[in-house]
Image (cartoon, rainbow over all chains, first blue to last red; front, side):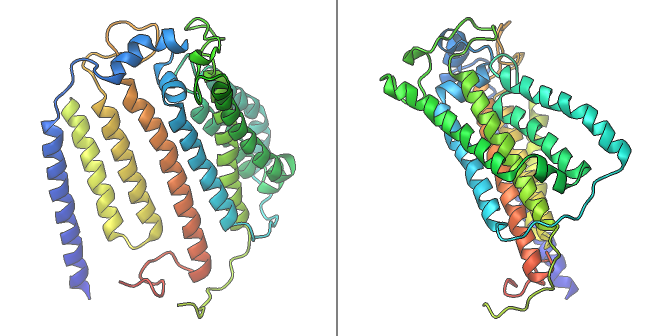
Length: 250
Length: 111
């Protein structure tokens, strides 16, 4: 019984090494680009004029390829729906009462700053590295900290799960409506400057046309979505695990 | 230097693949999956590097690195995170059903 396992391991290691060598040959053959070419060159030289955003990655993400980002937001939505559905039938039970008094007091000082940090990342996503996805993830950490430090009961009583669902849907609706405005104005779905949105001057806070709006929409969506995912799993873990079922399903 | 970066990505990918193939614990399988994902993101980011490039932020001095792979990576990170969250949710469900996360002990999945 011992030997087949060893052979299996050796075989897997061999396959991995061969694959790694093969990939390495490919990586060696890649020509190192010395200057920008293709669409990237256009984006870098024209992003400020066409979108008004100082962060070129944000300009690509929310303007040139905004449709991709909508699809990406749909992926999060699908995941949240799937996880919420998987854990829908588990009943909520209060179990943890949280950590000690010192941690609770300490967290209550920190949380406003975490939320401020998240808001800063979302609102300046068109100027500096950051944006809706990153800021939303930072925002979700604050609710996760609530869950851990004060106990999930507190978190559920302060931030109702329905409120999170509503926030997430609001983010999705805001994103889609912003896109539809461009469609109504005859410039195409998720059009920015061509639909007449004021792009402002690159580097200023009020610039970028639809990009800050879409950042806020994605921030709402990601923050609420990640928070819902965590809450669903924690809620499930607090249910007493039943004995393993030897079911009759095959 | 750029070769070191490629080599790190490939090594990480192979370690993840080995974990995925050998480990029978489902949590370790998911760890392997996330390692492979990180390696792929690393490779994409590395491919956009331009010697002497600056971050793609205005005002720009000199040449900038390719911003397109960075935008793609942002997409891929979110999808990977969703992926892993869903996988972990299924593992929790499996643990509830069978009382174990070992693939060998889960009845009907022995191969």
